[in-house]
Length: 269
Figure: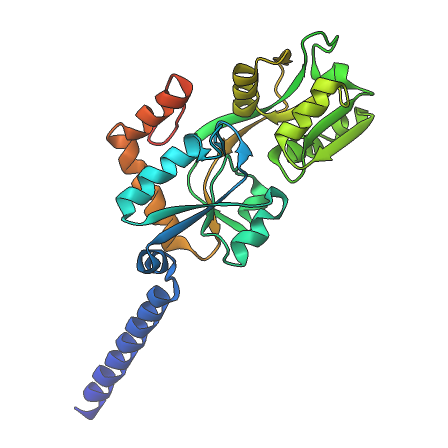
């Protein structure tokens, strides 16, 4: 009888410890609750990255990613705060708590995934080279011995440096603060090409009317995701769940069509 009671007592203690551990684990991730409690979701972005996030003629931050974030935070019941950051220090901004996420054409890579908790991809993209229309360059191989500009700390830098043969063939890689500066360098002949996101390249050429063209050959393909701190699983999952609901009810497709003339999103497909 005593042995049976001892076994029951030990079992109860074990179950109690498991329950306590589970409660502590749940209590450990307060990322979503913190955002809900303060009522503000802080989004870190490069505010010169059209059409994903940029300043319009009224100096307002607008873009495809901005409209997505506005709808997500509306459904979460919190206010969206847009926080421009130095893109080259984006991980530091996130990890020091200055922002709640990085959401602005943020490419998912294996290296970044080691330190960033990404959502599932929501759009596909590519890294491309832009040249002046009168340039003799027709392919990536034609850029051998030439100067190529790109944004420091960007996916373009990763794509170029990740292709050792291509990078070594270049005369110089010119890193600047943002894509608009790189494209200005291209326009005045400071560089022979600029490597950047296909979406950004198309948007810039369309809106600026500058005499640029995009090479048909892509340097790399990529997917955009939203980046959170590694331990902020609850907040990440809530945003992911909300995006999936937006895909299911057609809101995601509508926002995409408003910006791109068609649905470029990949959630639920």
